[in-house]
Length: 463
Image (cartoon, rainbow, N blue to C red):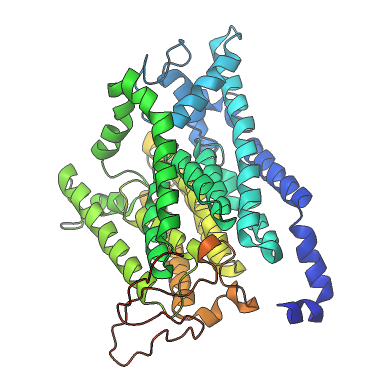
């Protein structure tokens, strides 16, 4: 890496400048501003029109949920009105509602509720970008610009409260990179209390810690996550158990929703896969995800070199989205930091962002078609083309990540001699447990610095 820097001193100076905190914060604020400007037509009144908010591509959940969740009439989430979101989102919604309570006109109050929420989420975007920069390592902090200025993230930033979950997850990964296991667990636990998807990351973390013989650190992280999750959930569970459970019941009872491949299968009546029975759909979705997780687990334990933490995090989340029965446009926010850390190469990432932006405009155009009929908006054929394109782009990016894992010499992050900048206690650790399917595989094949790799070799104990 140093040789490359010496050969291209100007490029190295640009990379260092691009990774400075001031540049990253400026880029994050610019991205948030662009995201806010994209919502200006709705803020000017289009969100009070069933079709206008879709025709102007500015739909947001934040404004209508202020009224639908009874915040406008003073109801407290979970206690006064059941809420379909985890408790930290409920807390943020209630806090914003308190801030705008003195405003008399309800529609003005709803608009200001949106504005207050945007300011908070913009701060979350800045935190997530800076955390991603830290997890990328000192030499590659500039990668976080790919988060701050990601078109998919900018377009979807203020549809829902997903930036809060993204920030907490990125901060958790950064804390793990800093070898602060208890703090990492607490942050990830809070992320799970915001959106449920960070729970998926404890599986890959277990596999990596098992392979590296770092199980004590895994249990510290997991215990801290459970404690943090309970700390914010338990009071609501005790005071308003039915309101607290609404999110979990709602998730199980949701049908195939817009954006998911299951919705496409249902629309075109694919045999078996297009089944309309909710129990069958839940079973098929769970089974497909379970198979994907099994394949990722085999990859994690048999790869010639232990995969980097963001690589496995990205793969399990991508598998979840591709097999899930719900894939809302704002879920791109979940993937962006992990994609940047897993494979910071421009063109596959840019292709995915292009597909995500196409889907963003495609879904709103499709809604216009559903409201107004043929000749308006985007026809089903074109909408499903954007759906499949997004699915294919994520699958392609995941395929590149798998290739980097199987051929670590092609991993641009490891090309400079680093092991895993986000790996924390895993970085540079020798293998203690691996699986080898070939009898003649040499112990530690593909990684001569790992003396403990061998067929089903157990860990000799945590250090």
